[in-house]
Structure formats: structure tokens, C-alpha cells
Image (cartoon, rainbow, N blue to C red; front, side, top):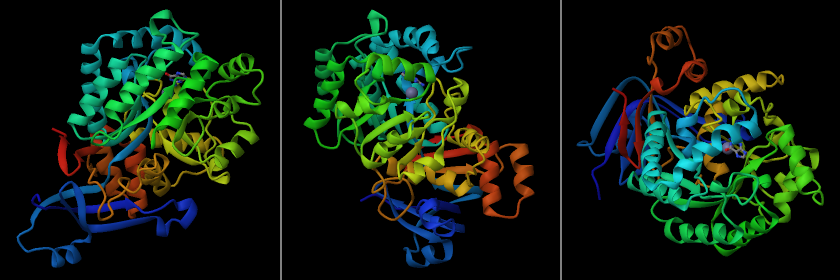
Length: 434
Ligand code: GUN
Ligand code: ZN
């Protein structure tokens, strides 16, 4: 058993969805709090006076000033191979894929390139306070081996998978139904449930998989327990028209995936912007999940995600950066853009709801809320230390607030990687801002 360490600062964490329990019951806040971590897990949490009274007197206490501890952010949709093509100018989805994305992903045929970018990507997550993500590789098996090697070494809880794509892309990026199945199977055997790693069957999106390949994806999902499925859904109007022409028998875009057995409570659909009513209904009925990717949806001009409608249909939603179509690794920046997307639709995003989405809601969306998502006793100790004085502007603005909600909102609107002072993975500090 390792030595327990206590961290003393303001502590805030999410307890439930404000849409379900109301704002007051949705969080716990300790203005002077202590978080005790031992063996990689939360051993105790609460007001400093209470926790220190019940813990051994020799407890090692690390004290922070003007900091706020919360649980690590969870990014439910991101492409690690697109880390170095973020901010590619001018196009919407389909041209962006052809002109920028596919040539960039070609580089991941080289395992050394994959390994270097995987490390870079994880460094970016840590400096932005993201401790868990659901991640696309490329079509190359080696890209996912490199990714899991890097995340396993850091003991980060990650979900990832090899992209399956066997048509409508350059030859150098295509697999086949057989090879996509066999390569995915090999990766599942090697990585699913290895340490904190989990596997997601990853058909890129309906246009780049033949019906035969989508059927193979469904077969994989049926063969193993606890596998995830990740793909893209109804992101762009031209894309949707294309899917309808490719799959004329199916009732809708979502129905294509449904037909091949790809819906379910571990299936995460990125974007889901232009859904029709029966698709909302079916997402809820199948317990499928949507990933809301605000910076990407604005950058590619894809459209406005309608969060309240997902609540109406009881569809779990997580937040995603969707780098490289997304323009930031920061979940704070992602929240800021989410707020504006809802504003454009006459909706509100309360900072406590945003906190929920970026932490416990993300964990629920990924069915990991028994392990991560907040700092309740027993959970895996993935947490971050936010700096309430990260920049002169943030300091000045926070000095001019009187409530926790205002402070949180300021951090969300103005914060980015500069607001992350430290990031802890399984109780170990893995990032500290200089
Ligand atoms: N649809 C299919 N592939 C992609 C991708 O790489 N990024 C985004 N944003 N949408 C996609
Ligand atoms: Zn994506």
C-alpha cells in the first residue's frame, strides 16, 4: 500500500446531471477542501476541517493557493493522428477530408511517426487537463498499437480503435472487410482491458465503409464483451445526402448503422447535428450516445448541435474536441464554444451543466462513471488543479466575482491550457505548468 497524500485547495466536483436533479444537488463544493489519494484512488474528500480530523495526523498535505481542484476532463471524440493538421484552411467536411485529412493520415503507415504523434497528443491532453479520451487512430493497425503503448505507459484511461474504411478514399488508406476485421481483432486481443485501455470498433463513417465492412464491424461487437463503437453521424448536409444515395434501402443515416448492429449503450456517434425525429427516438431507445463537438462544428461550418433535444429523448451526451477539425485540445475552450452554440439557439449552458458534461457526464457517456468522472471515494484519482489567476485577465475578472458559478463561468469562457496548473493520473502528477 502506498503512502496517502492529501491535496488542500478549493474543491469542486460534479455529482449528477443538473437536468435530472437540479443545480443544487448536482455538485459538491468545498471552499477549503482536502482530497486524499492513496493507491491511485480517492480515499477521502470533504471540508478540510472534517477530513483532517478523521485522517492520521502524520498525513502529507500539499497546499495550493488560488487554485480549484476538480476531476480530469473527458474528451469523448478526438482523432490523435490529426494533431498536427489542426487549423487547415477553408473547406467543409468532405473537401477537408480529401484535401487535408487523408494525406495527413497516410503518414501513420510509419510506426515511428505514429509513436511520435501519439506522445505529442497525450502531452497535449495532459497540458489541457484531459485525463480520458475516446480516440480515433488511422486505418493502420500500427497507429493504434503506438497509441495504446503510449497511453498504457502513462497509465491513462483511454478508449481507441483502428479506423475501418474500405471505399471512397485514396487506395493508400483503404483496408478490406477481411483485413479490417482481422486487424481490429488482433488489436482487441492485445489491448482491450489491458491496464486502463479499452477498445472501440471504429468504422470511420458510412460513406467509407462498404455494407460488407459494416457487417464485419457488427460481428466484432457481438464477439467481445464491453467493446465500444465509435463513428460519425449526420455532421454535414452533403454528407447526409451522400449516405442516402449510397444506402437507399435505409430509412435514415442512423438506420444504416442500426441495420448492421452498430447501435447500443457503448456506441458513440460524433456530431449528430441534423437528426430527424425518428433518429432521436432510436438513439434514445438504443441507449446510444452522442458526442457534441462545438469547435469542430463551427470550424467546418457543419451546424448547431441541439443539446436540449437530446435531453428530451434521454440520450447521453459527451463533449468532444474533435481535433483536427476541432480547433482546440482545451475542454474549457470547447465549453466556451458550446455555450455560444446554445446561445444561437436561444438555449443556456449553465457552468455546472458544462462541468458535468466535461467530467461526470463524459464518464457516463462512456459508461465509466463507476471509475472516473468525479472525486467520490473509491474512484480512480484522475484530477486537475485549475489556476484562478492563470492570466492577468482571468485574475482581474475573478477578483470581480462573488460566486462560485461566476468564477467557474469565467474560467470556462477565458481559460485554456494556461488555466491548468497540474494534471494527475491515477494519483500521480504527470503535468505541471512551468
Ligand atoms: N467524418 C468522417 N471522418 C471524419 C473526420 O476525420 N473528422 C470529422 N470531423 N468528420 C469526419
Ligand atoms: Zn471526428
